[in-house]
Image 1 (cartoon, rainbow, N blue to C red):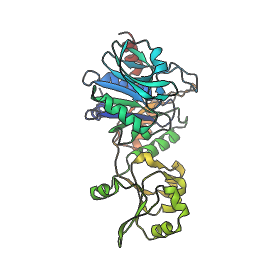
Image 2: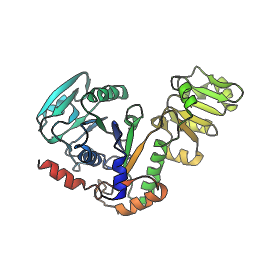
Image 3: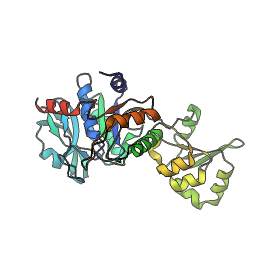
Image 4: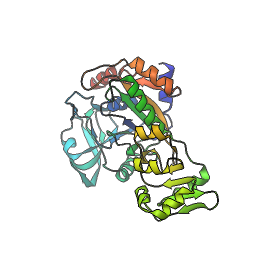
Length: 344
């Protein structure tokens, strides 16, 4: 095992909940999940969930073959009534939700035999937190298979670690893959505010501004977008040094507060486009930081092209030298792992 892979795996050791998020659809999230499971299942009791639905044999958008989600005997997983009825794995139901999803009520089940399953999970963060807390009664490691362009499940209030999945599905131009992956990584690793400010702001639900004369001043605005229509708050911001926005930070707001220190709850609240971020280089801090375990690269495009994974990794290493970056198809030997598990 090479040192990069060792560093990647060592980052998983103390985690209780890990979110795998893709910067684009088909960047190898499910393959990464299968690998993490295969490398930790002998030492950890594992639960699998998803913010969407995963494990289908074919991608619903591109119609291409998708890797199945494998479970071993004793693993817990979430699914819904529709997919549970179609299961090929003998399972024991531990929980059925009162709330419903488009494919039925949510089920937490324990696999009694190894095989393939469709993972389907909660549709919002509050529900996700409840399900993870429930699963932790039975397991010590929960993996979340994230959804396209939905980073909310990677919030530090839900997951204490994140893996980023990138690759040819985002672009066939290596420099574009590197550029966007670095941007997402930068957001994920925004620095935390000092502990004293964190304690003060953590329970604040309205926009607050800070200047050295008056300290923190709370406004009655609940969202950042309301700032644009409030002349009094705009005047406060003009003489302020910092601003706390409890909801989303957007492009329209970044134009207004780009020269201030901006504080948000965590990186999932940042909805600033890559173009605006690179243009203004705003100083953003978070109340709760995120641990990025590593980055996985999938060189395969869903439309049939294959890029040079070594080149992608080399270019990523130039801009992110301290981050373990591995090839989801090569270094991880996913196909070999999957085939072996399928033979059990």
